[in-house]
Length: 70
Image (cartoon, rainbow, N blue to C red; front, side, top):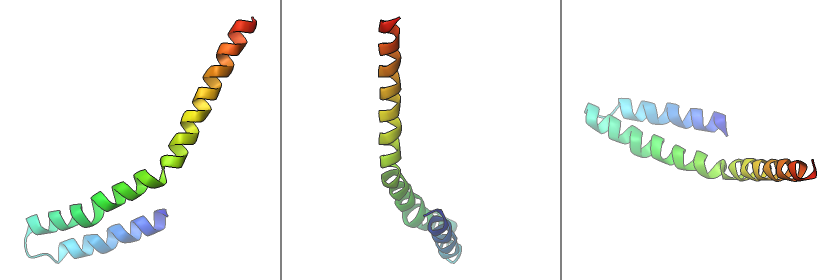
């Protein structure tokens, strides 16, 4: 997925460079690149965040159990 994101940044960067004004280029880059890619990466990473949170909870639970046994 990273290679697709890099390619998309390249394409939108070229689109932004062809805009007639700097402001239009910045707006193009923000609305066609930064916001969609940020959303996509956030959604794609939700499973990893959930798994990481679950692993931390299990580790904390195991630590509490081992403290009780000692």
